[in-house]
Length: 150
Image (cartoon, rainbow, N blue to C red; front, side, top):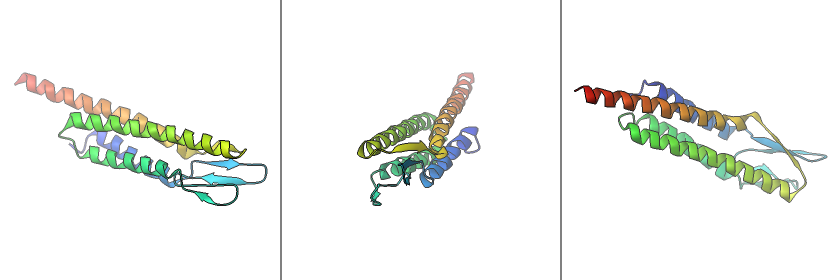
């Protein structure tokens, strides 16, 4: 049913993914300038925009869509669990891609990188996914116990 606690967890995952996609995730800094990195692009030292990190935004949108889709699969609990685990892997891939883009950008020019607070939101989403899997599994065990009583 939609009014279960796992629906709240999954809705929070979707909201956090959208918030993370909208906010900057860090900044590159040199001796003279600071260049902001978002999930869609980052600024190169010559002032041009590099849209390579757009895959980060795509991963977050996919995570949000999977979380919303999973909410409405309340009658198919095992599929809900599978999709939630897949969503966790998508969020882990997001972190892997962030690290790759940061390392790639730091190798191109000698700049440092400072993280911004929205970068911790996918970690919170991973924890919420884990809590949703536990709640869905608990519901599945409850339904199976009712089947044994009959």
